[in-house]
Image (cartoon, rainbow, N blue to C red; front, side, top):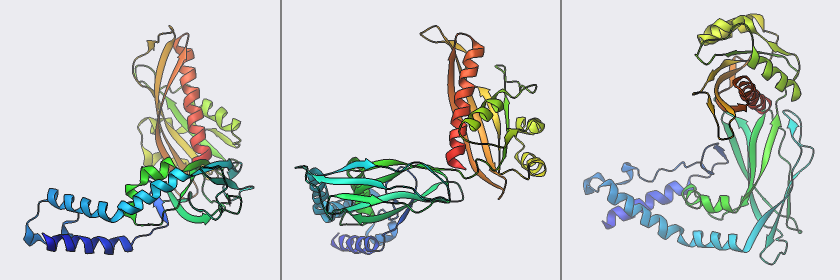
Length: 346
């Protein structure tokens, strides 16, 4: 038992000292967990320890090592607070922020905390799947407890957040994961929004509506027109409907869709297509209004590099005194949702 304990402790120390990343993918964790403690290779197989027993030993080691650090961080959080002061206006991809994100740190007596260490987590780019990659940097407040941060210009459009949090002395990924909740509860976040630079570059829409009996409606383009109106309200231009590809959209023939779009829309920057279908039964709500739920499945192409900006499903429910008005309400909600994703996701 003693040998196993020492082996685990030594392995843990080695792994902890070797991890201090500055980037982390967007997920449910504030920090990326890069260290796997329950690794059977860290345990001598000749001792025949069960996984349950080895996990218990590791938990004891973690608690003993981090007990003081956890206590110190919780005490820090009880004595200081981060306040939101100001944020910049939304910018367009490729341009610089015109003003600073500003926070102020004060102690429990409302005194400014000067030279106070703060971590900043913000988006820097997207990976090949469109997931946001964050960077984490550390700065200190000025003599008035203020911290002014100007993010670098972004080439990508974002609809994300920037977070300011108390810096921890211990940067071990395992420790940070343990106090993740405390970090988030004592942090402040601002919207981090960067609009696409493609608003005026031209694009096309091919959304196909389906009837309540799941039949494609090919004699009009109601949802496409609703999206077109929503896009123009958000500052897009040179966008139009592309009904010539309806049959391929109905069969979801992505290869043919993209091939035909490239031939006809080669001057456009983006192309979005998909289907809008009923999602459940038409019903009356408690206010005696008709309810219609729709499901939109859409995909937005980057016509310049043959990649996908995003692919998503959107659920919306419309209300009205009859089915037609409820449908109109649901379609407009879907159009606004899609146009927002295009504005900050392309």
